[in-house]
Image 1 (cartoon, rainbow over the protein chains, first blue to last red):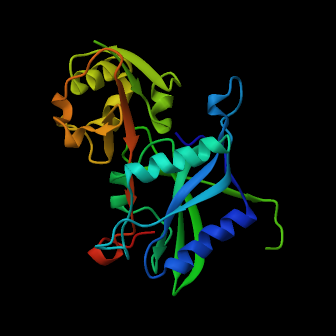
Image 2: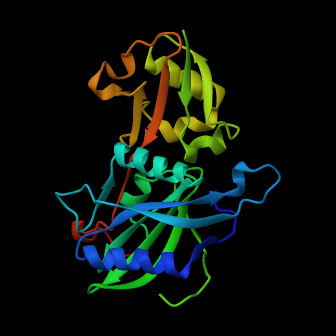
Length: 155
Length: 102
C-alpha cells in the first residue's frame, strides 16, 4: 500500500509520542493516530497527515514490556474521538523499550493494511528513533514510510 | 435476509472505498462470506489461510460481539448490521528471544 508519499506529522505531536513512550518505560505505550487521508477524497493524491493523538492504555498487563494490545472497544472509542473532530483513525503508535524502531514478526502478524504504524524506540527511558510502517497488500512484509515532521515550533 | 456489513477504514481500499455493503445471508458467517465474494481482496485480511477469522478481527451483530453469541453461526434477520471492528496488537517481542534484526 505504501506509495512513497510521506506521513505528515507536526513536531509537537511527534514529541508527544516520544514522551508517551518515556512515561510508560519500561513498558510499551500505544495510541491512535487521528488525521486525514486523501484516499477517500475524489481526485486527490493519497497524502496522509496526523493531526491529533488518542493515547491509550496498554491492555497487555501480562507482558507490557514487549507487547501492546488495543481492544475493539478502544478502537471504537478512538474512531468516535476521530469522528467528533472530523478526522479518521489513520494509524497507531507504540513504543519499543530498549529495542530498535523496527517492526517485529509479531507486529506483522497482527497488523492491518492501510494503517500507518509508528514505532518509537525508547532507549534507557529516553525517546530515540521514530519510524513508520505500512503492511503490504500481501501481508508478507512492511514497507517503511517516511515521516515528514512539519511546523517545527518550541514546545 | 438483507443485512448491512460495516467495513472498517483500513479495509475500504479493498472494497471500492465503500464503508458498508448490503449482503444476503442467514448467518453472520454467510454475511462475511457474501462480503468477500463481492470484494475478493478482503478475504486474506479477514480470514487465515485455513478459513478461520483472524484473531484481531472482531465481529459485532448490531452491538453484540458474536463471540458471546453463536459466533459465525449466529443467525441474522432483515435489517441487521454486522460490524467488522479491528483490534490492534504488536510489540517488540524483545524478551521472547526474537532476533534483533534492524
